[in-house]
Structures are given as C-alpha cells and as structure tokens.
Length: 175
Image (cartoon, rainbow, N blue to C red; front, side):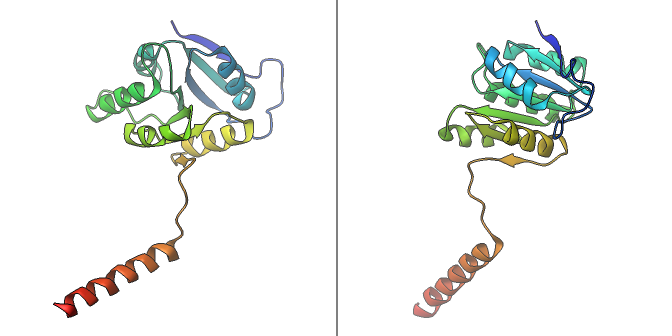
C-alpha cells in the first residue's frame, strides 16, 4: 500500500535547487533510496507518495496524477521497465494522461531498456543530489534527461551526412 511522505517538514524555507510545488510518486522497495530521493528533492511544497510495489503505481497515478514518477529499476514483483510500459500503454489507450517518468538504473547496460520502455529520462546509480535535482527538474518541465548516451553535436552529424553522400556519388559514378 502506498504511503505519503511529506518533504521538508522541519525546514520552513525552500531548499535551494529543490523540485518545488510538485507531487512525486517514488516506486522502490529500498529504504535507502527513499531517503536519498526525499533528501535531494524534498521541500515544503513537495509531496511524495511512496509505492513499495510496482503493481500499485498505476492505481496511485489514476487516483492523483503526479508531476513526476521516479521508478527504481528493480521493485520487487514489477520493476521500473514494466511499470513504465504499463503507464505508457494506459496513456496510449486514453485512460491516463502523460506522466513524466525518471528511471533509476543499476548499471550502464540498462540504458537501452529504459529508452525502449518510454521513460522520459534516467540516471545510473549511484545517485547524487545534484544529478537527481537536475534530471527531475528537466523531466517535470516536459524535457528529457538521458544520462549515459553520448551527445552528438550537429556539425558531426552534418559531416557524416556529407561523407555518406560523397560515398554514394562515388558508387553511382563507378557503376
């Protein structure tokens, strides 16, 4: 059963860099991860709902649409990949709105699965507060945060296109 966690109860001032005025659903069965996420993102205007079971996430989202869903890759009986795919399936069926999803991965090799599942972004553990805040803000604002995928500058892409075009011309003239 999901349990509400209220961030920043002891602190009247909003912590600098916190994700503010948002409701976050955090799905994990690891208590250390709950502590780390609440410490990094918590503030007086931030509320958290903690789901220990991945199967309960869709019901919690239906009850109250969050501003951000943070999913651990491994959550007991239904992991972050399956939960993401379930949320995206309900979204495509029109039963849920689009919900921004940040996935917390265990290793670099999980990037492909996170991308294919429909997550808006991901971080590879171990986490730190700066990366977690940066990713959460970007995803909650409608963007994405794809850690571990090398950025490709536009000039590099243009150079590759030019090389391919030149190679095609050579092949065409040789025949």
